Length: 376
Image (cartoon, helix red, strand yellow):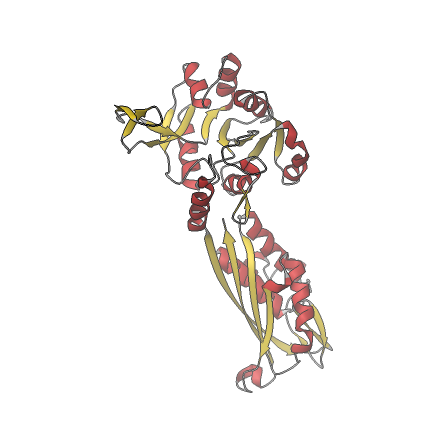
């Protein structure tokens, strides 16, 4: 079952205010469309993403292509934009059509639609209307409307690609959404569970509500690492990527950078993805003498793939010698470059064990580290 997420971002809606269309406006730490894309980029069942842009936004296309996202140009109306997006999907079985202005869609809502598509040609999330409904002229109530059997439509709306493409080809006229197009072609649409948080940003007030929802959904992980390396023959030690002259070296299968190893394990720990030994077994000769930045870059790449942003690292080296303080700034610079974060978010410091234990006797160096990851 192959799935493409088709993100419709060609609208010019003005009710939300701002100098640019709502999908390009900031929402917390990212733009509206960034949050929307993240929901599908991090979903394990989505194979590719297509974004439909307004022709006036063609200059934005390259930043999506560099992420492996396909780009299609919008049409004269929403239906035309969707048709262009469907043509760009290529050879996949199913498509999830989603409004870029719904940045708070959850993995659960997406999964619900995908599960339904295993047995149906079309599925979409709906939310039962619970408020009393009125009819009115804007200034006074002129009547009431029963809410029985009424549901608020949401996206993503999922379809067998060939089915919805044929329905769009046969449809003529405006349509509120793709479910309307499908039903006009006689296609049964299965309703899945919607989510009150899956709001569509329409007015300026919706930005504040969406911000609160995203903050509540934020996944913050903290991981800890601990490592020890014994002293052995050598004329320097490598700590956090910096070579420090010393009358001994550190013993290890790789370059024995106890600082980088510990930070690497802290990141793996935050991801609940084991430790260095599982990803780079010491029994494998290819890692003998390997530079530890290889392991650290792998951990950072894994975090990115899983949708997490590294926000802070704190590394404490425990030893009597060598002195770390004179090299701490350089260590922070090296680590920040590998981690892909600002140096202000990287802490490297040292302490002694007051001459107690193996570090106090000068037999080796220990290190502990904490890494913080955030997924939005």
